[in-house]
Length: 394
Image (cartoon, rainbow, N blue to C red; front, side, top):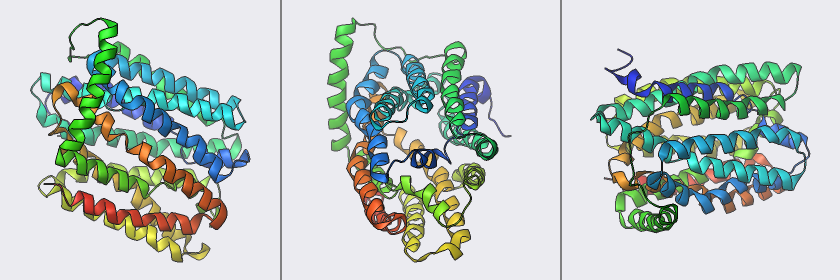
């Protein structure tokens, strides 16, 4: 059976939200092209996108602690609304500083969601003694988002071909706002923190934040998961270069949507295949995935326009194989998280984005100077350090 007993009863609002999210991401294959057509350099784009990392640095752990101390449901819904309205405003602005501020606001919204959303779900499942649905949730949520992401880029390609990329920002932002209303009306929260005065909640938020940081860096497994996540993220600190690089290799712009759609289709397959790897040691599976992605990135040094098909196939594989890694790692990670600090500790793990900021800025500057191809390939070397970190896991 596709769904286990009572799985849909417990999880359908969350599954629907992931499907809506996937259907709304029409902008993803084109957003770098959109900003490049506005005249921004790779360094300027790196600065704009780094604003998300800055907001994560400032707000990720406090908002995670807020979710643990006040309401995970409230945190997620607030995050959707902030992010949605920030995205909808993007087409109205063309200058660097206003866009930087909007991305910063969007990043704040994402910090209210990250950690809180999956902690909300896991706590609900634990309430009903359904730990057997943990992995099912991570697999199905990614799969449903991927199903939406198969359709969205194809529709986005048609819109881009006959209309304007800017329309896609409204669809993307609208998806966040729709999900906020969906979860408000239909998703329950069974995690109940102690009722406390707002000032005490704020005080405990910072207290729990420092406690979670200390716990992460003193817990060997959590530390190596964090380091592995950092180094594997650094492999793709050049993400701003991928869409223009494919276009530079002679790919028509609207074909980018087709590439993203195919990648999303294979993400669905890899997500379900992840179940087959639960019996293997997590460190060997993740290290193998990182090695294959690293090998592809390093091969970019030697390609030209005649090898466009190879680059597209490699890019699709590198993107879709992440769907195999994610549910395995998330299922493994939650085994080590205490219930009362679950969202906060997940926020600490998500702080890897802060470490990526300076490297993204460096990557943007280097791509402006040396071109996209060499720098995309060079950053693949960070995979070595990611593999070393993951091999330290139990």
